[in-house]
Length: 244
Image (tube, rainbow, N blue to C red; front, side, top):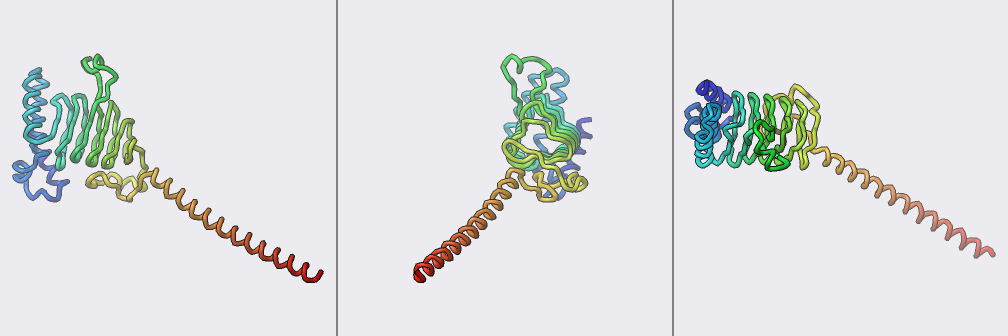
């Protein structure tokens, strides 16, 4: 079972990383794949109740790859960690099939107290459904769910559920609805969007800038009209004074 999963993981790297020229290259040179190998074996040990040994294998993988995956996490098939340095995946995290994560991503836990952390079975970390892509530097925190085929943009901080097929960007993360749902499901590196959808807050700022520019132009027109009226009034006053 483990080796079948690893074969599927290799195929996923070959499919999603254009720099991967061969399976041998992935196996020997890709630290993201190495981290997944350590995780797969550590997870088997963890489930077999060899908790300390599972953690030991996990820590060995962290030392060698710079990627930390807790052996208690549940990770599906065809998982890709691209580049990978700085990735942290917590104990109760759940990751579906065909998920891609880039470097410096954290799937972290947010617990209200030490007591709650020590409770067995408490869900503290995120769930990523099938087909999710997480851009570099993103922080997904707490027992939340990122829906199927959703995208999390680079450096986003996500603390609430993200609906399926949408994109989350910003700090705190805000949801963008895709213009084309079919294109939104296509694989795009670093969770970029097919329609180039901008940050919604940035959209509002740009709209405000446009409106402000229009208001300035209108104020300028009104000031010109005022000056013309003053000139006409002054001319009329002078003419009356000369007649008198």
